[in-house]
Length: 320
Ligand SMILES: [Ca+2]
Ligand SMILES: [Ca+2]
Ligand SMILES: [Ca+2]
Image (cartoon, rainbow, N blue to C red; front, side, top):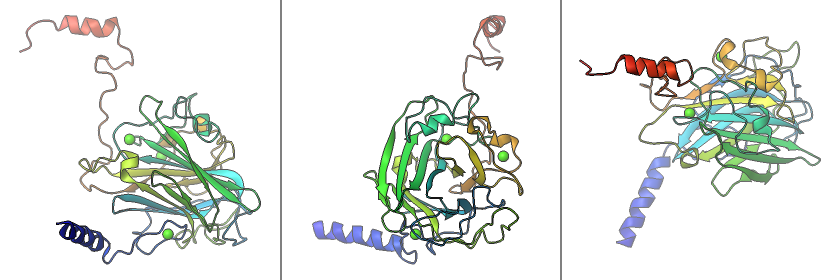
């Protein structure tokens, strides 16, 4: 019986990967990834890295392309580009389930020196309509030789939740491997991609080194019964998470400059979708209707008060 079970497990394992070599989260794009979900449309305002060193970037940061796929229950994300070795940040928001935050709050977990909450409140970084991330991950690297660090946090509808420092690694050689099964890798070899000031974005698609992340779907709270499409918002931010670059994916309109103060950025007011979508369910509505936030707020003015009570009393009695 044991042998038979082992045999079945082995078959499932091998048939699942047959024809689709397993992705290795190492910062180098695997051939298994489907075509890019999004390509960069802006030359970088955070410096053009041209030093072609795998283990560091002293020239700047850029986000050229975003690929994503699910393999054997693990979400793999590859972002071609560079992350400057000066402790600037790569910030990634993932919307993989109902709930979450369309506008960042200030009472999320304290991760990366409270950098996540630095982007919330007054009014708070606002995503495109219907994008409600539930998970946050940030990567940074710096020092000489460069070391890399990552943190992650839940984004619950009402704040709170759990966050964690994921660990330390070395760009190019040693990805961060967390006990939850999260892997974060960085390869800074890219010297092409998008240019800097006066340059071109024509090289964005070809970049095959950068940041690569693996996250087991259960860590995201992903519900396999719902099969919700998974959305991503990625950008380069300053060392204090307090000044957004123009390197955003989905991209800003071509020619856009730095976004600046994250709390004041409203991506819904910027043309185009500043998010990428991994389509799991092609039937899913592009923008599912939001459930009422407060069922007792009958007139929808954001408060439950006497006006709503008057509406109830006015309709008191048998309902035909
Ligand atoms: Ca890889
Ligand atoms: Ca969500
Ligand atoms: Ca937008």
